[in-house]
Image (cartoon, rainbow, N blue to C red):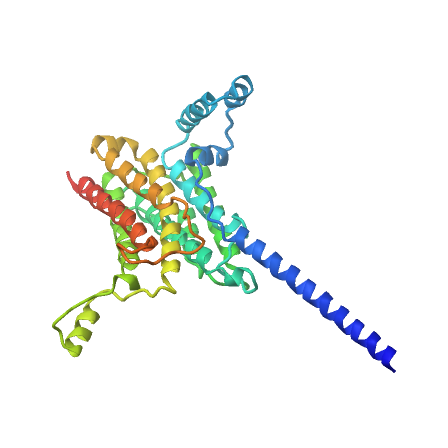
Amino acid sequence: MAASEKITNIKSKGTTWILSTLASIGILILFVLSQWWGREPAQFNILESAISQAGLTAPEVQNSAEENPGGEHGTQEAASYEILAADLPLGYTYSATLAHIADTLLNKSGGYITNDVAPPGVLLDNITSWELGALVMLRDASTALRNHFSRDQSQSGEDPDLAIAEPYFYYEPNSWALPATEAEYEKGIQALHKYMERLRDPNAGKKAQFYSRADNLWQYTEVVIKRLGDLSTRLSSNASSSNFAPGLTESELVAANEKTATKVTWMEIDNVFYEARGASWALLHILRAIKHDFHDILLDKRAMRTVDIMIRELENSLTPTMSPMVLDGSGYGLFANYSLSMANYIARANAAALDLRDIMNRG
C-alpha cells in the first residue's frame, strides 16, 4: 500500500513539474513576443520608398557599392535617389509616403495590434497607443490629399480613387473580424496606389492631379497645429505637474480645477507618451514628403527653414528612451519626466507650424 502511494506521489509530482515547465515556457514565449511586437518601427527614406513603389531601380548604386563599400556609398546612394525622384510626378512622393505609413502599421513586427483579442497583443497598450497616433496623422494627411492637394479649386470634382481611399483609413481601428481593420486599411492602400499610377500615366482616362500651392499647405498646416497642440497639452498635464493655489477655499479650488486641463494620471501618461511618439513618427515622414513635393513654393515663400525646424524637433522627439518604462518625475526631481520632455519637442514643432501657417497665408 505504501509503495502504491509512493508511485502515485511521484506521478503527481511529475505531472505538476510538466505543467509548471510548460507554463514557464509559455510565459517566456509571450514575454519574448511582447518585446518584439512592442518595438517602434524604424524611420524610412521617403525617396527610396517612392522609387521602390514606382518600380524604378538604380543600377549605378549597386555598381558603386561593389567598387567602393566604404562611407561614400551612402552619399552616392542619396544622390541616386534624388536623380530618380526627379522623374516622379509632383505628389507621387507624398502619396507613396502615406501608402508606406499605412503599410508599416499593418506589417511591422507583430502586424497591426490594436484589434488583437489574444495575448500578448491584447496586453500591449503602448504600441497600440503608438498605432493610434500614427493613424490619426495618416487620416489627416489623406484627407488633405483628397480635399486640397488633388483639387485645383473649391468647385472642382474630387479624385475618384482618393474618394475611395480616405474613408477606408477612417474605419474603426479595433475591429478584428467581419471585416477586420487590416482588410479595410489594405483597400485604402490599394486605392492610393491606383491614384499614384494615374499620376504617372499621361494617357490615363482621368489624369490624376496634385497641386502644391501655398493655400493648400496652409489648410493642412491648420490641422497639424491643432493635433500638435492637443498632444502638447495632454503631455504637460501629467499628475506630477499638479496645481497649487494657496489662499483659495475648497469650492474655489474645485472651480479653478474645472477650468484647467484634465490631469493625466501616472497610469495613463505612458499611453499619451507613445501616442505622441506615433504621431511624431508619421508626421515626420509626411513633412519630409511635403518638403520634396512643395519644394518650389517653400523656397519662394522662404519657408524651407521653418519646415526643417519642424522636422528637426520631431526627430529629437523620437530619440530612443533609456528606461524600460515611461518615467513621470517632477520637473526638477531626481527622475526624468518623459512626458514633459516630449511635450517640449512637440510644442517647439507646433511653434514652427504656426510660423509656417502665417508664411503660407501671406500674399
